[in-house]
Image (cartoon, rainbow, N blue to C red; front, side, top):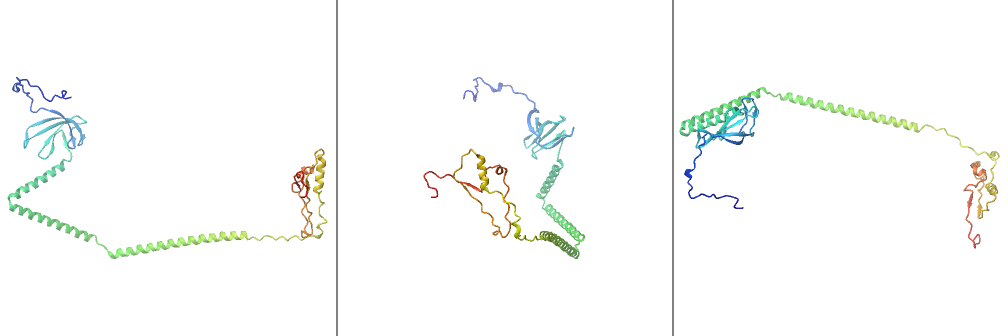
Length: 316
């Protein structure tokens, strides 16, 4: 890679640098440089604002016959971003700043001028006091006199404010007392309203409870208990056929079916009117159409018993 980097150049033995002709360039030659606006400015032609930090392709040249402590001063040419008018400014190494020359006005220039004026006055005063002791005494006397005048003016302003801003403490206490009484009265009224609302609500609730209790405690007419009639047995309806007869009829209607073995017919005990305290026994429920046509009797009257296995004696 070293052969690609030409670090040393070849000079022939008969090389004479004095024979090389020098370029005759003008002293005010201009170069194109890239820079940013050093301060806020406004174009005089169109009024466009150019803010600090705006980038430009500027032309740079050296100012002739202007040097500060051996440092050259440069001038820059830029164009307005709106109307393309030429704006020029140059460096100011004395104040480490830039100076506007042509085409625009610098914003906040008044503050800068005021600061510069203050610095100039302060510098002149220091130069005078450096070699003149009487001037130092005069300046101190002026400063003390000015300070006393400022204090006197401030005291007069304080006295004026105190005379105008008179405070009536009795009126303040009276107003505070009235406001306190008004607050207590409002609180008392609010308490009375809340108490009245609670009483009204409790009264309504009591009325509702009383009305509900009256509805519940309404008198119910008492019905006299029925007395037993001794002759009620004679008026009893004719008894229906017994379950055994119904079962026999159903067996006879089946005909060809084989007889069932192991049937046990259980009869219901006949109600005794004497044991029912003299009250008539309730009539049995009516039979269904299947029972009327000779069907199988109801389950509570007849229980089916499975046939006993062979070789076992019944009853054991």
